[in-house]
Length: 81
Image (cartoon, rainbow, N blue to C red; front, top):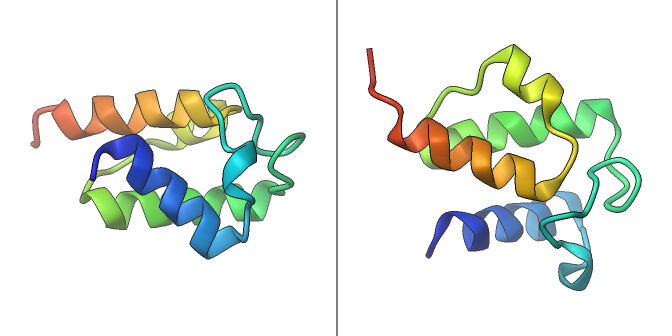
């Protein structure tokens, strides 16, 4: 399963988001109905699912699903320290 598909699966299962509205330009708050606590929980879910770390700055800047996919993909390929 690719990154985008796995992330969609998390949103659908964990946050009961309808799969047909999860698009790259879907905004977490406006389109997907997630509040700030939901978004922080999503970040934790993504960190656990992909064995990555997302900085607070990156997490705070995530507005859309597409931005989150890009962030996760970059974190996966970032060298581990």
